[in-house]
Length: 72
Image (tube, rainbow, N blue to C red; front, top):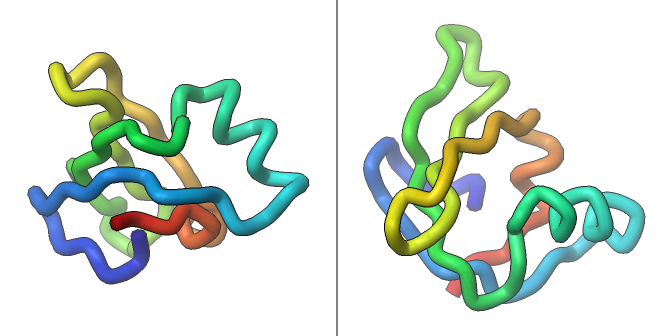
């Protein structure tokens, strides 16, 4: 996730941090779901992700939280 540039997308492969995984799963970050990096705050954190193939919703995360999401 940390290597994505604005506008790039990827498919969630897995979630690294077991403690953060439950929170991310509840927010719709399910393996197999497509995400796109939508924006970054001026200082780099937080970032916003568009979650879902059909742009289901936008999710705002800290960079440290997003770093636990591994993409294919």
